[in-house]
Length: 125
Image 1 (cartoon, rainbow, N blue to C red):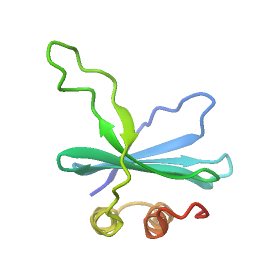
Image 2: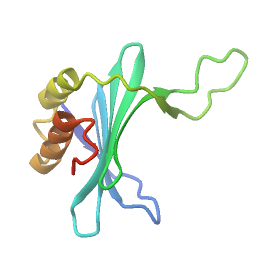
Image 3: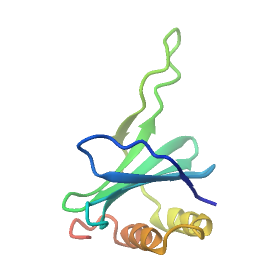
């Protein structure tokens, strides 16, 4: 089950964020000052890669593969980066996310699941 990581580091000049995690998912949710959800990034394990679905209000969706910065012989691990990856199995990820989101704020679950239902609609939100 997804559990909140607390305290979550807040970055000056960026929106307030909350972070939830379990063995399969990491979910970061961004909030406006008034408490409205203005974006999220759902990172999920999809063998052999980790992927990320990001939605930002006013900007839309992106779906990426996460390059962990590992696997380079004779080099130190580098910073993970997002690389384009258009393949998103919304039905499967939604099913798995729903199964582990029972303890989350219903508002968070609703926005994430609705977003997956509307991916890649640029007018969502």
